[in-house]
Length: 521
Ligand code: CA
Image 1: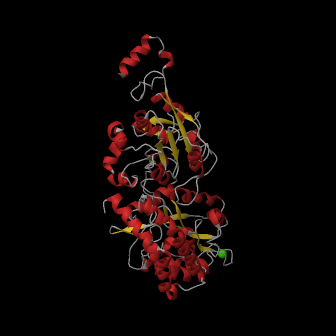
Image 2: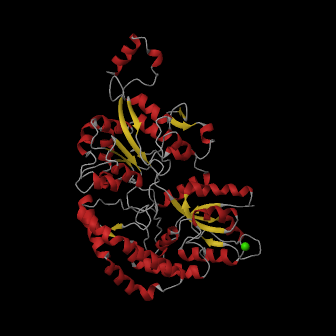
Image 3: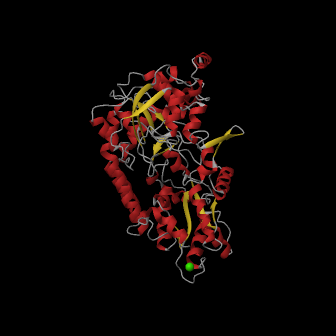
C-alpha cells in the first residue's frame, strides 16, 4: 500500500510537496487527516501546543492531527500521591471528555472513572491493533499488571521511564583528602567521616561551619534508615508502601526503622545532620555546595555531579558518588531507583468515535520512529543520525537545560504514553555522574520498587478514610524523634498501638487484597 500511494503521489506530480521520509508506512488513515481532540496537562510543561515540531512531525507521519481542547492548562498537578489533578477534575466537571486525555498522575483518575464509563477499556484494542505496545507488555507482564484497574482493564498507556539509576550517596572527596580519610565503606565509617567533617575544618576557614550531611528533600534523610536495615520509601514516591515476600507493608513500623530513627536522632543531636534539614528546602544543595559548606548528601546522579563545575571557584572542589555504605548487618542498599512505570500517560475518552485509530496512534509512539520522535525530537532539527543512532546537535545541547528544550519542542512529555530511551540522557550526563553510575552498576545495590495498586470502590473508601491520618501521625512522630522531642525507643509500643487505633491494619488489609488481585497474590 505504501508503494502504491507513493507512486500515486508521483504520478499526480505532487512529489515535491511530499517529504521524502513520509513514505506512508506509519499512516493511520488515508485521505483527509483524522482530527482528534486532546486534553493534556503535565507538571513539567503544562501547555499543549499543536505547533510543537514533534507534534507536526507526528501529524506528517501518521495523518492524525491532535487538536487542543485543554481546560485548566496552567494548573499544575498536585504534589501528593492522590492521582487527582485540578485540571482533570475541571475537565470532568465541564461534562465533556475529549478523544484523548493525557496527564501526569492520570492513573488513579482513569482507574476510578474508567470502570464508571468515562474512558474506553484498552485490553482488546491493544491486543488487536497495537502490536508494538503489546510486544512491550508481553515482555513485561509485571508492568502490564501494574497499569490495570480493579476490573482488570487497562485505561491508559503509560509513560515508561528508562534507565535504572536515580539518586546516589555523594561525598566531598577533596574534604576526605584534606583530612587524610578514605571513602567510607560502612555505616560506622560514614559516621566517622561526618564527624570529622564537623570537627576538623575540612574547608579550612578556621570555623566549625561545615554541614556534614544535608538533603534538599528532607525525606532523603529518612532514607538513611536503610543503613540500619530499615526501610523508608517503597518507590520513587516518598513514604510509599513496599512489598516483602508477597506482603504489602510499610517502612515506618519496622524494627530497622526504629533503630535507624534512633541513630539519626543521635546524629542530629551531634550536629552531623543539617540543623535545618526539615526547612531548608530545594535550594539546600545549591547553597551548601556553592558556599563550600556541605559535605555529603543523597541526590540525583546527573544534576549533583554537575556541581563539580564549582572547582573553578572553590579550589580543589571535588564531589563524587560513593557506594551505599554497608548497613549494620553488612547490606549495601540503594533504596531509590527510577520507577519502571509512571502513573502518567494518556487515555481514550468514552465519546471518541475512532478508538481503533486512536490506539493505532498510541501505538505509533512505540514504533522505532515514534519512540525516537518522543525521545529526541525531530531529525535534522534537534538531532542527526550518526552510525544509526540519534545524536543531539551540539547547538541544541548548548541551548540551555536539555530536558526543558525537549519539553518546549514536544518531546519527553509526561502526558504522552511512550517508552523512554535512556540514550537521550547519556549524551549530556557529566563524567562524574557516569563514573558513579558505573560504580552502582558494578555493585548491584538496587531493590525492587512497589509498583502500586488499583482499588475497587470499597477498598478505596477504607483507604481514604484511614490512610491520611495514619500517615500524618507517622510523619509527625518521625520528625519529632529526629529533632529530639521524644524518644523513639521509649515510645515505640505506644506508637504502634496508636497506628493500629488510627486504622493502619485496615489500610494494610485493602492494600493486600488489591495487591493480590493485581499481581496474582
Ligand atoms: Ca570550616
